[in-house]
Length: 247
Image (cartoon, rainbow, N blue to C red; front, side):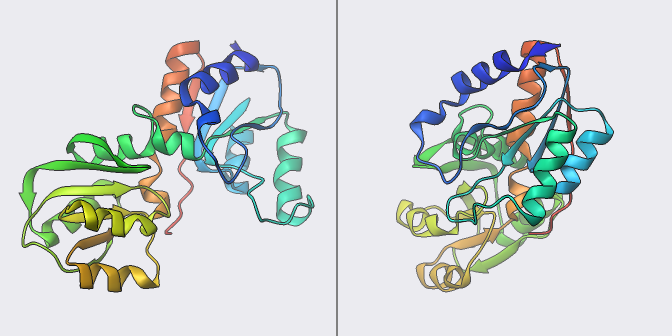
């Protein structure tokens, strides 16, 4: 059992959200009970995740995608009301970290994706974009199969580049807009979670392999690493719940 305030202070120290201009508030979003015994982590604070957390008696939910995004309607009605009412009724805290979790050198989504994919020497390239090398060069088809095996999701592969892939760049989630930066860096392939209509044309015309590996699929791992670190630091229980999302 640990104090919620101590956990929140540690998260702030680890993730330094003050260094980011984000699209949502980072940290505590909905306040629950003061003491924490069981933390549930997940990618998104969906109703399905909240219901699972209630079922297992969680005191805190820690996610990458929380609430109160810039530009969304502010009234607490409909789906938003139902989600927040469930949290308040069961006295469960909701804590969310978006860009600070993407970027963290140890627990971040980019760093953890490199571990899952076996990318050597992972390092920041530009902003939130990372780069590294494959231990063994692969053909584009073999690399697509590698992504499918490691992430349990068949990736989208568009573009045209070298016959073999060794040097790659990546950014998890909706990061297709960084594709031109990857092109400029001269990597063989670029991975993000989502693609948009211009992505195909950019990849084809600039001679690079692009792999859309899934927003959810590429962002499962940072929050798991963060939850595990909290469990070790405070002696609390931690469980990751993966609510399926094909996007």
